Image (cartoon, rainbow, N blue to C red):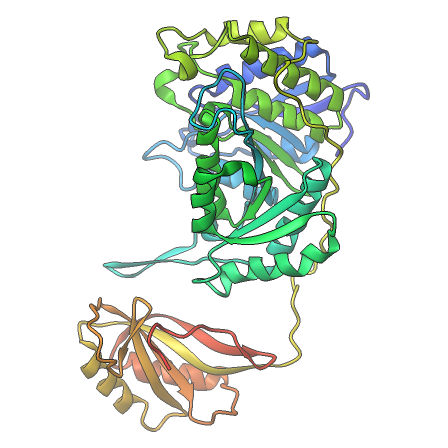
Length: 487
């Protein structure tokens, strides 16, 4: 981390955020100032106000420069208003600084009644934070068929899996579950599963379990106390972590950290909730606990424990609780709740304990873009995605005629992942986008780009095509999946 101008203080970029963000951030700042940690705040902006200034990303240059300098951010929730901007400013910040690990802890809180009170829920969801469907790469294949690319890399899996095991060690936890949909997405989600199983033996002190993500959701509702750390892909992690926050009282109690090897961004899981903005009624706990996570990242473990103990003591005492817990008519003001925590600094709850933490060792993964190097590779064919009003049988007949004298043969046609030609005898609906799979007639060959371009020209002479995918083999293994019903 870059050194601050004042060597006795740590400089942190502070982004107040939108909606309820400034109130929550101010609450956290008051508490940290009361503890006396040497933080020098560098206030910068992102989100709604920046979008309205005409900055498409919602993140201005001065904010980026501040983060590059401080390497640590505490931020309120950001809004992407309808009609402004192109991408979520929250996601933009995470991606710009490769904060690949999204850490979302949940634990049972005293005097916050839920159906799970008394069960001892205390777990962390570790969500990969920059890949998967959140890459946001989308295309309209036809006017009525949309496509989103799900990108999962071995390098990204390596980083998030190692981070999850290191976090378990740093927090004294003994179990890590890897939640995937590898039974369906065998390449993408399967890559996380395979990486997890290869890395796990390096952590013999940690029990490692794979679990299908839908069963994980089921088990979280049925018996959440069985989990300690759950590592998963981006979309799965987004969904599961919102589920887990509901186990302990809702998003008002859900902090998070976005951690990379260079920069860390700390923020609540909840959004900007504009209907509550400026009313002094919001629960700032999630932002306060995000700040506690920030302090531990800065090696301020004593201050972090002091604040967390005071917050838990305040909840345990039960005199001052916010409207999301007891109803907004009876709930304490945001400022009163903050005052109570400050008054309780130095006190410890009797029914709950703050976990012992150690510094986390961040995984050191080589920067080389090429993370997997096969010994052999070849292109055995190509999938061409075409748009047509034809039904499968006449489409197949037309394509076979077009490629009759080419190095490729038509193997099959699928619609939405299901083989529809040659016919299987099943009853399958179709849309106007088809995947047409062509394989080399020479089964031992290696298709050249020139051959593929010539094939595209043949198909394109009759049909509108949207995109292609090379069918590759790596070290003799298929690098593509078969359609449902394909031989």
